[in-house]
Length: 55
Image 1: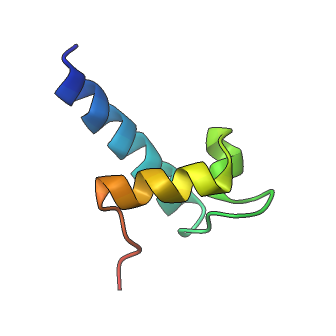
Image 2: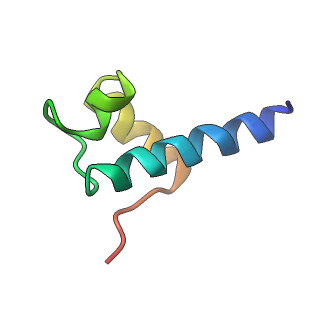
Image 3: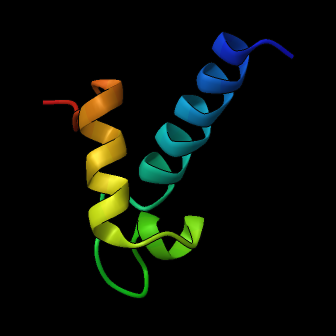
């Protein structure tokens, strides 16, 4: 798998986790807990990847 493909897989994984929890990042039932990362790390990755909650 190329580096670009790995980034795409990570972005899709984060997007799916966010959708599963209705774009909640923080808390025990948030995407950060689901992905087992700190919420601030998740927010940074979302910004880097251009992931935003749909309007």
